[in-house]
Image 1 (cartoon, helix red, strand yellow):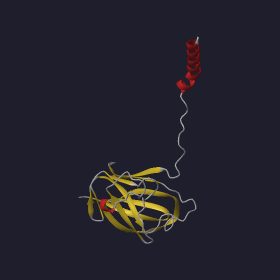
Image 2 (image 1 turned 120 degrees about the horizontal axis):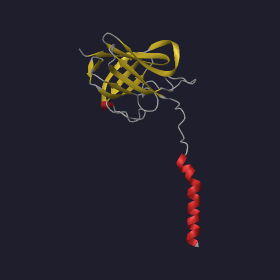
Image 3 (image 1 turned 60 degrees about the horizontal axis):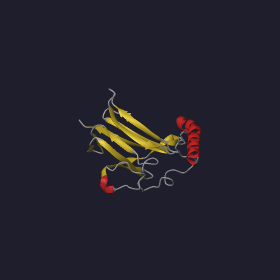
Length: 184
């Protein structure tokens, strides 16, 4: 009798519970990130991919950005969340130095009138917490330029030139340009 009772309870719970398991529970998808990821790509006129950058896009949301949220004189991940990642699909020159095809963390050190651009060999890092200067592959300084129309969200794009591509990075009321040249 005891076995029959256990069998009945188990059978009933399986029958009642089966539709839940068969249909599955609805997944809990994450809400939109406050700083969603984006990417910009550079291509030749023939459509060949030259470079791409993947970065988190923080928003201004009424905050003072440069000198406050992004302190002057400190290494910045150049975006939000993970360190921005630059991938070169061919060897390019930056600041007169040849940079081999591959992936690099893209850090910056913002200052009021110029930024230091850093390509670092360590990738897949969160923010700039794991930044190691000895892993720097290249550093160049570029002037800060003023935007006529401020940007609410950090934005990056590549602009092709006769000599290569320029990575333009803008947020709030300023932007910088990082020139990459083809190796001839």
